[in-house]
Length: 195
Image 1 (spheres, rainbow, N blue to C red):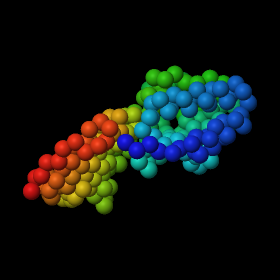
Image 2 (image 1 turned 90 degrees about the vertical axis):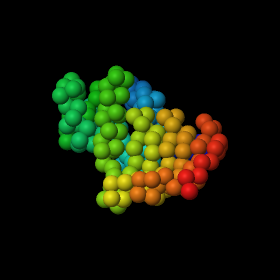
Image 3 (image 1 turned 180 degrees about the vertical axis):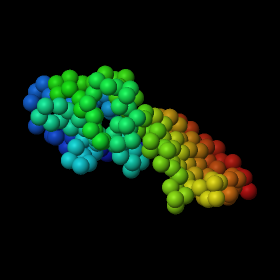
């Protein structure tokens, strides 16, 4: 798998967090560290003027600090779904409020991330036929197109660590032409021709 150069964005996120007072900054840095651990397949970016995480172009969530709390922005669907599971955290329409000077437990963050990845997965296939599915760690599981309810056109499948597994084409749900299987380093290992 090719390495991504994310140093500019990572530095920008670091600068964003540096503006907070020390106890709050420490809580936000702990939150950031936990999210990076839970979403190794995500790109860390600044979106909506906040540190955010995207997987293959899809916004998973954002976070930031405010005068009397920190907030996690996983979207309205996740907030609704999580409201009863974690009543100790106040919520607004699309935001979960967190304590200002302490990071939330990893189990809570894992639940939020999983719920958001499930929500993203449920948004596919699109009306255009484009479809994707992500592992709960943010790495892409597969991407391709659907036509009349069948896999059609170019498809790619990936391992849980983000490395390519197989790629090839479907014609109305049937594998056709050459399909390439990749080893864990991403190098082509075998080609199978389906005619």
